[in-house]
Every structure is written in C-alpha cells, then in structure tokens.
Length: 202
Image (cartoon, rainbow, N blue to C red; front, side, top):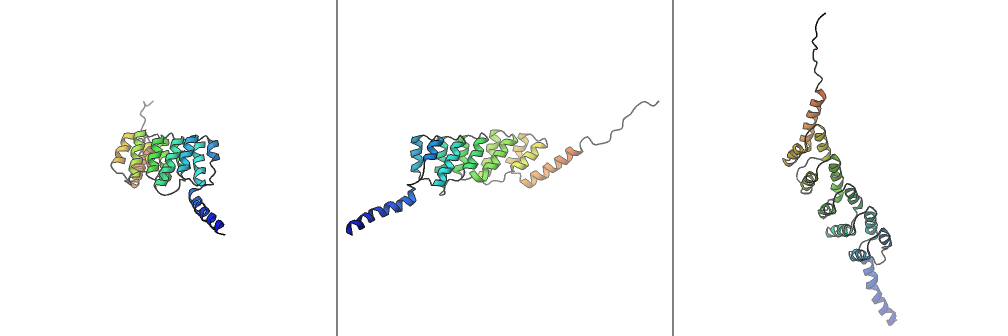
C-alpha cells in the first residue's frame, strides 16, 4: 500500500502539470506544414494549446515565416491570452504587409480590431507611409478618419497629400462625410449648366 501511495504521489504532480503544459499536444501538423524542428522546439517552450497549434498551422499554410509565427504567439501570451488571430495576420500578409508591421500591430494587441482597416487602406492605394500614419494614430486611440471615408474623399479628387493633411489635423468621420458629400454634390452638378449656342441666322 505504501509503495502504491508513493507512486501515486509522484504521478499526481505530473498529471496536474500535464493539464497546464499540454504534454499531449499534437505538433505533427506543424511539422507537415514545414516548420523547422528547432523552431518547433521553441514553440513547444511557449506551451501552446491545441487550438493555438491549429492557428499556427493556418499561418504556415498561408506562407508566413516561422519567426513571425513564434513572435505572434509570444505577443499574445504577453497580453495574457491565447493566440487566435491567424485570420487577421493572414489578411495582412496577403495585403503585402511586412512581418515587422504585422508584429507591431500584434504587440499592441490590435490584430483583430485593425487588420480589416489596414487591408482596406492598402486597397485604396495609400502609400506605405500614409498607411503607417493612419494605423499609428488608430493604435494610439487618436481621432482618425476611417478607411471608408478616406476612400470617399479620394474618389472626389482629393490627393493623398490633401487627405493626410486632414487626417493629421484630426478630421472626424462626420467631418469627412460632410466634405465628401459636398464634393460629390459639386461634381454631380459640374458641367450641367445650360450653354446657349450662337450661330448665324439664315
């Protein structure tokens, strides 16, 4: 009895530790997705859950680097929550955002809240510096015109320089909407005035 009790006392901490350390996690999908063995070992040290492993597999299948995968998991853990933003990171990757930019957003814990906005800014055609300015303001909680309103202003003929001047001056969406509406109305009425044609009488 004493022998069995001693064995049980040794196994109990292992069992309890296993619940926290995810010792039965299946890392084979990551090996299949192409993660290098050394990086796989580093990931194991981050103690990911099965759900997080699936997220990292999604990152790898979209062509993200091992380094970014590890950094994104670490960033999420630094904010004390599991990594669950593979879709957001993949959308940024697909829009040609660099690993450094994606990680910077993750380190602010803003991947899910900003990724769609960031992709739209890129689709609108803003330069990298302008996209960075808008995202930096948004991550700092500063008043920033939304990508939808920026797109409207751009479509009314404003240059990127004009738009960014408004952004940096703290233009709100309401102000942007009012200006865009006024410019759209002006463009709609342009060239509709009646012009009398003069000709020689017979």
